[in-house]
Amino acid sequence: MEGVKKLTRDDILELEAKPKSKVEKALDYVIAFLPTLFGIAHLLEYLLIPNHGMNKHTKIYTYFIGILIAVVFTFFIVGLFNKKVFAKLRYKAPFYSFVFFLLMAYDYLTLKTGILMLPYFPWVDRILNAAWSDRAYLLDCVKNSLILLFTGYFIGATTGLITGILCGYSKKVSYWVSPFMKLLGPIPSTTWIPVVMVIASSLFKGAVFIIALGVWFSVTLATMTGIRNVNKDYFDAAKTLGAKGTQLVTRIALPFALPNMLQGLIQGMSSACTALLVAEMLGVESGLGWYITWQKSWAEFAKMYAAIIIICITFITVNWLLTKIKRALLKWQEEVD
Amino acid sequence: MAGGGGLVASNCTLQLKGVSKSFTRTDSQEITTAIDNINLDVKDGEFISIVGPSGCGKSTILRLIAGLIPPTEGSILLNGKPINGTSPNRGLVFQEPTLFPWLTVEDNVAFSLKILGKYKEKKKEVDRLIELVGLSEFRNSYPHQLSGGMAQRVALIRTMINEPEVFLLDEPLGALDAFTRMNMQDEILSMWRANKHIVIMVTHDIDEAIYMSSRVVIMAPRPGRIKKDLIIDLPYPRNRMSDEFIDYRKEIMENLNF
Image (cartoon, rainbow over all chains, first blue to last red; front, side):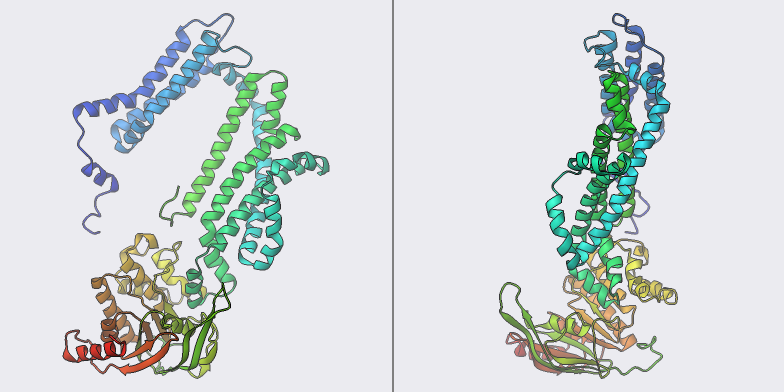
């Protein structure tokens, strides 16, 4: 251990790697620079090729692509001085280039040639303009959606953790709760939407219930499984070290079941997102799901796409946060996926 | 308190009186008698090794003394009082290290102190023991980052930190390579000689039993019973090559029918 200590992991990887020829090295730099090239190519295509028919474009997309180019170019410049950043860019560069290529192809097929027609296929510039002009409204929708999502999620997660721990630990509780889990579990929580929307005193409460139900189920099941699978040896070891009663739950069962619990929480989030959108599309009169159906009824496809993109960004952010939390909590595990 | 770091002269005794243990099979009504009518008197400062073929209930005896399972018949007395459930005063080190994977080395060692609310007063003891087994560098590592030998050393000091009056070792060195094993034998011996409490160790290794213990209990299987109780009358540290050592080995081998 001691002798190797001064080297970092990266140093070792570099020392042990096969030496690269000059051509290979040069090729790496070219590939790392490709995203910037593709970005510029797309910008030129957007600005120089004349639009099809009556199609118009604005400067918003120019700025948008400009910012993206600036980002990949900065990435490249930093990469020239930092090996780690360069390795990452070298790995990601082909895909970034492909994204620029896709944007260019889509722009060419819609704005420039009209092969893909309005109103179903608005070009990105149109979507950005729609999002920008409706920004206050969209932000409000994001806020309402997130409030609904997290209210339902937290209620479902909390009750799920409680029932999961109780079911996993106590055979009596499991006796009464498990049959219901087996019966109701396979039914997607969205099935209940029509019933709940009629019975619930407010649409918001109904939607919260639907979201919470799905989360509750996956968290309960995962927690229960985790706690039941606790290696008996850990209990024995803890007992001989003086642990008793609830200490066995808090100090052994819970930390042992934590990976399962987090898995349940992440799964619960994806079911919550589904339930949220369905609830908003079917009943609740606010939020992104509702915005989409509303704009669709006006054939405002650009605004609809804008909302879909925002949903995508929101959910990705939420899941990214959950994964970060999971990694931080599970750093004791050998491998965290 | 047990020993209190050697200041109080403790003279604890452990007695097994007519202890039998039977298990019922889960899949049938059949009953297996693991051990039958075990009588054993252990005095303070004794290091006892239990040897015998597998299936003779060696581990069962340790689990009974630890209080993890109750005896079917008979009683187990510590200082004249029947034992009741588990206690940090009767520490058990398992064959596998069973370190808690979610805790660092330091937190594993401090586990018991935290449970018993003694962490603040005995915090220094954690540092001392980690240093004793040469793992200061790994105090913030997680169990999966340790080798088998290191993990077993952590398991030893995790139990030792309570200064148990009865230190139970269930083949603690079974999974280690020969060199680590010999080092660990000396480590355990020096711990025992410093604290002078009762140690009861189950082992498969006859040389290990003779090298370490003051008394070797030889068991016979089905049902598990004591066949021979042998005092090893040799000064420490012992020489594995000496004639007396080899004589003891011969005697034990004969008792095990080899």
